[in-house]
Image (tube, rainbow, N blue to C red; front, top):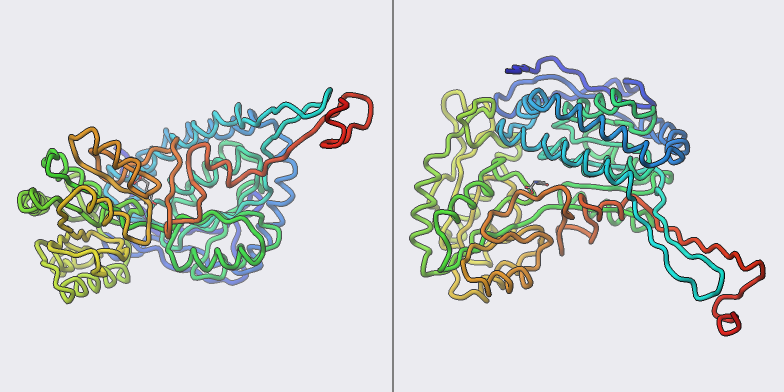
Length: 502
Ligand code: UN1
């Protein structure tokens, strides 16, 4: 049993292969959300630190791009092996830093391991296309080339998995990376960077610049030598980044959350639906972009479903995620706790019925952490704010509907489009739903969470801007297409003009 207790950790920047401080001389505490206690501190960088990281990345990238891709992939295989070896230790640090329960922390590290081996395999593919030319004795192909320097900005809710979704494809494709992790979760960033270091990634290919607020992020977005920004985080920040990148003609990939629904039809296996809802709504305390925060239920099974749900919710144990019996951990910080509680007041004022939860755990040991009781609202209508705004906490709204068509319509009525799910045994509804649900991810007879790393991850509408993390699709963010024409006719052939003569 690995029993890592984190205390007094200090996270610095990693620039050009060295762990370094900043002239800012400032640090912020890292707080364990389960206890409210500081477990370390993280450097707060300045614009100059971003400059240093970019110049290191620039130098390193030129050489890295010339390393054959199968050799670049060897580093990722080693990263994958180290992640696997350290899975338990990393999961324990992750639980203490972010709060999610151990099983989920293990699952998150597993996503990183899977991503490492999957993207390492890409080192022997990175497929391009060959295409016939219009002209005789002319060869045409399109190849993927690295974009150059990639800026990645990652959130606290999946501090290691999302970092691997972004950095692994960027690195295997021949880019260098400047990475700003979330202020709340720099320990996982430090651990991943150490693994890159041990795996033999040349210096400067990955650079870590820690910070809080917008200083580091803004400097990255505005930096003329950072070619792409890949961001996962809040809608407000994402939109600001998109505006700035738009002005600079900088490619930007955004993933900004969801208002994901589970649809339960009248022919559903209700016990299975309840399990699916519990797992996807209260796992990670509802702090996943993919978390279920709406249940759209056919009126014929509404009462039965609600009863079962409330009964099962009462069994959920809240507490420190290091305890294997705990099912729901804390939320990330006091600010989040406050926001969740405010939404609960909004729901009540809007006339929704509070069927379970709705309070902060304010007594005993739990009062020291940021614990919110799993909460269920019933009799919610789609026009209430709790039904269409992202709460990012353990709060679910049950919305009754009369038909399958109405269920689809309600699902699609929100401004987000990340994930959705339907529980039904009707094969025709299954096919119609996978076509008509307008989200980037659709589940049938499963909750809204649990995306696998070899499929594209992302969504429609306010969730993003059309790009995808994960899967081969991620390479579209981190590569340029180059079209190459090789004429071996020995004469000047003029495309479009000489076609008939050739
Ligand atoms: C996120 O919340 O941003 O599908 C990522 C899931 C996880 C990843 C979630 N595999 O729930």
